[in-house]
Amino acid sequence: MERPEAEDDLVVTTPELVAFDYHVAGLATRGLAQLIDFLIVLVLWIGLIIAAAFIGLVVQDVNVLILIYVIGTFVLFFGYFWAFETFWSGQTLGKRVFRLRVVGDRGEPVTFTQSALRNLVRLIDFLPSWYGIGLVVLFVNGKGKRLGDLAAGTLVVKDSDRISLRQLSAFTPPVSANAAPAAASPSEQTLRRLEPDLRRFVSSYAHRRYQLTPDLRVQLAGTVQPKLSAALPELVAQRGPLAALDYLADLDQSSR
Image 1 (tube, rainbow, N blue to C red):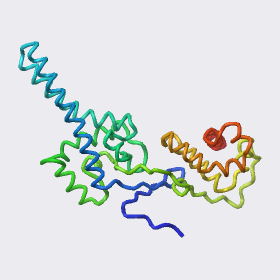
Image 2 (cartoon, rainbow, N blue to C red):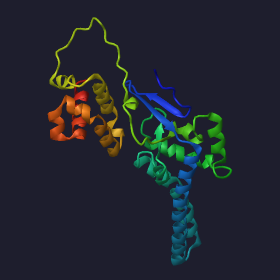
Image 3 (cartoon, rainbow, N blue to C red):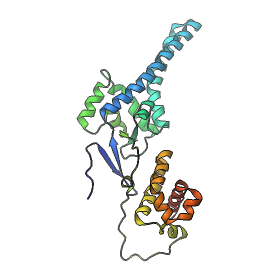
Image 4 (spheres, rainbow, N blue to C red):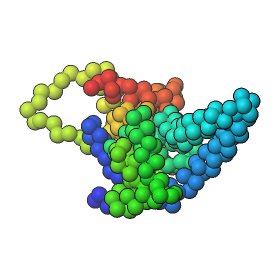
């Protein structure tokens, strides 16, 4: 029996037929994360004002002060969110605290363009004050998306404390009854020593491992360590559970 999905769940299926579910971030946690980010930006902005005033006094030109202030303010308020989301896997410092992350609509990592677009549109979301338009759009669309998310094709989701085998479950495509059996390669022979559930787990992990944090990969390896040890005791004893799981993932990819 399948588990009914909560209203705030996002379930996506990759082209490899691997199903992932995400929990859409709530308004309260998003607001608190934004508050932390804006406090950080505010401190940096005050530093910018002080620096602009000092430089303006040194060069004795008020136009320089205004130029530094205007350009610096835009770069700071736009660049902070864009840079962190682009280079920190969809997270800012505030999102990191509350374990939130920006992802694409299909659950893929947010791209350079998506992050730039959603943060440019943030200027509209913020009107008339403190995300007035953004909150209205968020409530109207019912998908946890502000205007910037709709424009960029992104979503803010909760990072799981753990990833279960159910979250990495793969759907096995049907095999034609008339298909002739092919000779098994050495990689396939090794993979055939795994029980079906573990084999599907390895296949799903192989497709998604580089999108998982190192801590989650270690946790996943620990979760399946007993089954790995039962199937391939020498490999686990020599390399450890995570290295063994990565080795099997490489075999799975090479056997396709």
